[in-house]
Length: 125
Length: 149
Image 1 (tube, chains in turn yellow, green):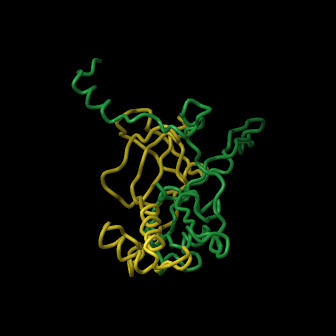
Image 2 (cartoon, chains in turn purple, cyan):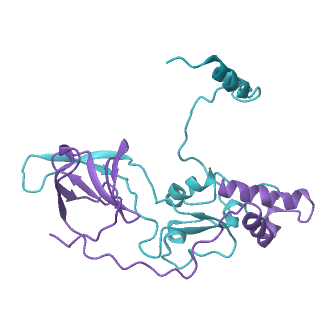
Image 3 (tube, chains in turn cyan, blue):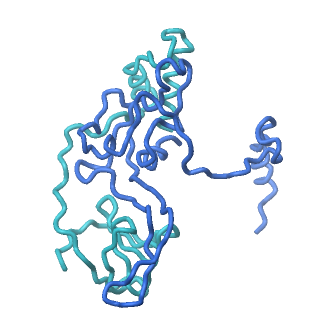
């Protein structure tokens, strides 16, 4: 309820008569109430150091030792499925990285596995 | 499976009935359950993909009232066949219009959502705030739509 709660807090200024239009709302007052009363985060992390730039993108990965054998095999890079990799033996099986975590999923249906640890994969070709 | 009657009683006590003045022509139930994207407000400010991905350095906004972190998330618009390289006569299905990149390649997955994204153009609505159908481009809305809920 982030944007919706902000709308409600802003509308209160029209109700109490302190402003006459939504365009004239004192946004700093809205921010203070969102922060202090609703503990709503209103800004992204300031001054955060950017993560290291990603290295060269691998063209494929070979997966072995998966919990279910159908997830093993050769995954080829694709630009169509989240910029991830698609299994050559199972066209709906995808391997992709999201938020630094590697995942197995069938697009639009089910997320099967999310890596519990983040590893840096060696470059491959 | 049988639900114990005492539990049913608790559950039914929460049900207040359907809204009596909405969707009367459909027995008070919305005829369409989910609309992912539709018409949106066009304000003096329209958030675009650039405002989210920091391509123009505006990911931080002084009038921010929320923080977004969902990927740009557009579903496919169609499928078409393309020849398989090195295999004459063979084709494979490729999706068109489908993308889900991280919202920012560096600096973390976040962006500020400014207050003005809810505002009609000045002079067109003095008492209207639009927290759902925000003033944003189609691509930006594929992410901001998550923050409206």
